[in-house]
Image (cartoon, rainbow, N blue to C red; front, top):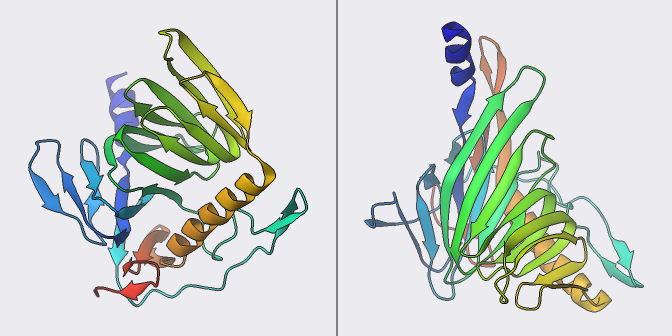
Amino acid sequence: MAFTSTASAQDVKQGVVTVVRIHGEARYSAGDNVWHPVMPGTTLSDNDVIQSGANSTVDLVLAEKVARVGYQSTAGSPIGGSVTIAGLPVTPINAGQSTPEQNIIRLQPDTTLAIDKFTFTQTGADTVSDTELDLRSGNVFGNVKKISAESKYLIKMPTGVAGVRGTAFLLGANGDVTVLSGSVVVSGIGANGQVYTTVVAAGDQFNPQTGQVTRLTPRSLVAAIRDATAIVIAIHETVTVVETPTINGYTPIIDVSPTSGHSGTFVGNR
């Protein structure tokens, strides 16, 4: 029994959160209130806290491997095309590079996000991920690839928690949720003090003050999807997966090209 327990524990691996893009200023702390500057290539793990400044955004990639930062990465051409929503053309959320989809988070201005837990477990049949984030203030956009049934992706807020599965979403620390694809289950304490649990589907938004789920107007949904897709493509353009030979085959390593601002200006090298 002791051997089984030890072997199981060894199957759990720490995930890595990598800063891939910054517009403006940001800082991070190891949970001790000692703050350090953030730059493309900064890696975060359990108990770290990252904070974006005023008029600043920070893009994060959440993956199993440490991301290497270097300008030698190359990006392919955007794929996808467009779909029509209520008669209006829009590029789909999952349009991007011909590289493996990444779990991403964008911190909007004046946002504080803590990484409470981020691990991967190899069960033999599947990879189970356990992501627990703490949105202490501000707002985030997230795009989460489809995860296994046993995996979980939770974002805590001051008054509740959101459960995410294969979803593009906007989430505020005040409990506001807008879902662009997939669904989010949000639970918390409403303005009336009552506990709620609500499923927010694609194209819907949830207001914790009223406790109501409402449908986005077609034009609002199109605009939100366009903005979200621009974020996804911008991040995927910086990410290339390189296969490095090992004695067991190939081990993926992520290369990230650092950029800054909307124009994608190069700001660093290997």
